[in-house]
Length: 177
Ligand SMILES: O=P(O)(O)OC[C@H]1O[C@H](OP(=O)(O)OP(=O)(O)O)[C@H](O)[C@@H]1O
Ligand code: HPA
Image 1 (cartoon, rainbow, N blue to C red):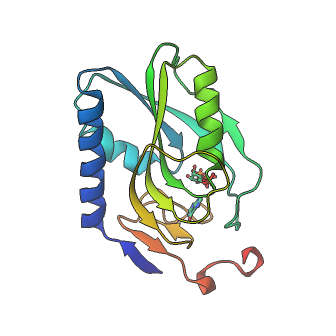
Image 2 (cartoon, rainbow, N blue to C red):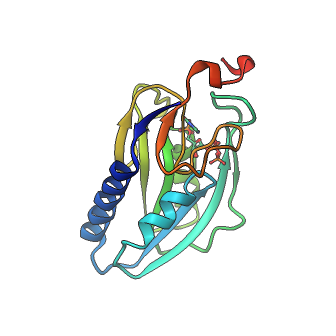
């Protein structure tokens, strides 16, 4: 694997995301919803730098399964999500790739009565978007490569890496290429 974004670059990127939110929301209460599972590392690092009255919740979305590096059917589970009616919500995810996950989640959370729904991602994979939606905040543009680390997985591994790396073709199972 090849490192694309180092630990210190990630720290600076997350600091910058937090500063944007602290400026945008100031003293307004915010509900941050982390998209399981990939957002967990970003969620933990980001919320400790937020200064507004904050609620934290999670929901789940999954479409990349097993050895696949392309999206399959999107399955959404809102059972763990707190009530968001009348709330300003920030959906937080690790990566915007085809955009199908966030596009669907923004619609679903709006339908639950949130006052506003913005979205934030760590990584924006350039040139892959398949939807008419863009995240409101992102820290890094990355090329069209399958990446792991800092929450991102391949076959449920590598989420614990403190940096973001691109997998080389020989590290990706032959059946998913
Ligand atoms: O923009 P998209 O093409 O929709 O891809 C982005 C989504 O894919 C990944 O989730 P995944 O389905 O791998 O589930 P996970 O978070 O549990 O790993 C990632 O965490 C995002 O939620
Ligand atoms: O590049 C990626 N890596 C890991 N998970 C992902 N989900 C969408 N794109 C990616």
